Image (cartoon, rainbow, N blue to C red; front, side, top):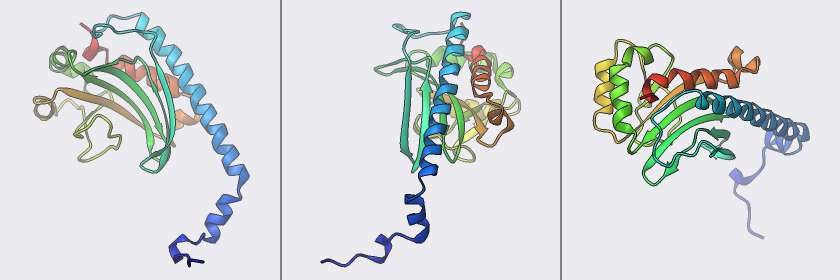
Length: 209
C-alpha cells in the first residue's frame, strides 16, 4: 500500500471540522437567509427600475434575472444576484449584488458595449452628483475581480476627477461598486436590500439620459 504524504494527513482541527454537523447546518441556514435578502432586494430593484428612465441597451428585458451560489471564489463561498441583467454579445448592463463570504458585500454596476459612451459622458458631466457617495471605480483588467483597495479600486471622490478620467479614457467597459463590510451594523440589522437599492439609485446620474 502506498504511503501517505504527511501533508495529506488530517489534523485534529480538520477532523473536528469534518464531524461538526452543526457548522454545516448553520452554513445552510445562512445561505437561505442571504438568498431571502437578495430576493427582497430584487423586488425592490424591480420597483425602482419601473419608476425611472435609464440608458437601457437594445433588447433589454426587465424580467431577466439570475441568482447564483457557489463555493470557490478564491476558496470562499459566494452568492450573488444579477438584476437588472443584460448580457448579450459584447453588451453588458448589469447590477450585481455579491455576498462574498470571508470578504465583503459588493453592489456593482457593470457596463460594456454600446452604453459605455453615453454613460462615460454622464460620468463627467454629472461627476459631482456621483462623487462622495461611497462608490469606487474598478481598476482591475477584468470585470470579474471583486477585491477592493490599492491597485483594485479607486474611490470616486470630488478631488479625483482627473485621475478617474485617465482610468476611463481607454476602456470599452467599466464597473462602479460600493463595498460593505460583513460585520457592518447595517447587515446585522437586515438592511442588505435597503443598501442595495440606495446604491442603485445613487447611480442614476450615470445611467439616466
